[in-house]
Amino acid sequence: MKTELTYKSIKLLKQLIATPSLSKEEDKTATILFSFLKNEGVEAQRHLNNVWAVNKCFDPNKETLMLNSHHDTVKPNNGYTKPPFEPIIEDDKLFGLGSNDAGGPLVSLIAAFLYFYKEPNLAYNIVLACTAEEEISGKNGIVEIMKVVPTPSVAIIGEPTLMAMAIAEKGLMVLECTAHGKAGHAARNEGENAIYKALKDIEWIQSYEFPVQSKTLGPVKMTTTIINAGSQHNVIPDRCYFTVDVRTTDVYSNDQTLEIIQQHIKSNINPKSLRLNPSSIKMEHPLIQAGISLGMQTYGSPTLSDQSLISIPSLKLGPGDSARSHTPDEFIYIDEIEGGIKKYIELLEKLNEMS
Image (cartoon, rainbow, N blue to C red):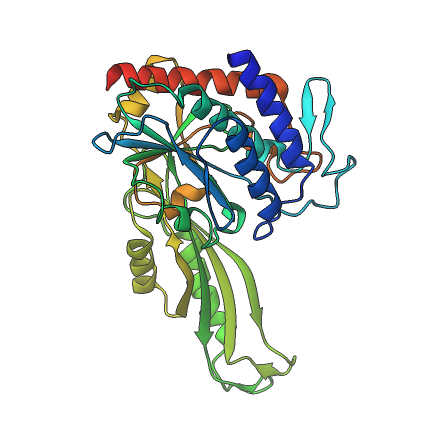
């Protein structure tokens, strides 16, 4: 059955690659996923461009595990030498936009769901959620699907991790800051230079170390990425605008991190978003212990996923390599998909034994 699932998964992934599904434009891939599940005898449902289903022997008295991955992609960049929407297999590699991020993890999770779909003796329920808008952290993706699926107690988020368990993930805040000065003539000793005021805050941002570091994610990381001020060479600027990229950890929430920054810099801060929170799952969680018993490694991930938009414990795990995501001529190895399906099934079987 696993061999057949691998064949079907690769065939499905080819269909997904051949169907453009940029964020907010996933209507056609949602239709493909819905039809695929229906053809496999699954009572699938659709909400916006999200497709979901529960196992056939769903029991409301049992806890629910969610299997989630996304079917939207970023735009293909200019470095592609192969057609981004043409699935091409060369040297055991399946090329195409979204093959690695996150088509491979998505079809592998679907295969694992199908494997357990009719199983009558699971210790837990399974809900499959194939979601949209992950690449833009949109509001019509996992945020919407969580409103309609049976409430899960834990989730596996399918992303390329080389099948290592990402037990924590950094969050993201983008801060738009404004230093205020006073305009004056550059030739005279007048005015208050907003650039110099901004530099003092930027220096603090560069050098500050938060008191507590995460065991899995390390320190909170702040990086000034954009700066803009002035309009004439002889006028002291009265405004200096700069943007700070803040990668938060499971030690501080986004709100707590923002509060600490506000206490130390004088510039006005406009947080562009506070909704992309850091996430983590305890090492003692049965899902993690099941993975460890199978020899799976754990680590902390610096990259964002839909974990940032859900409040339940979650594990990021999937075939493929994050380093290939969003790169020209994106690909995933065929044997990574085969291995991913096998490992997902083994993990869920082990969890069932331990539950």
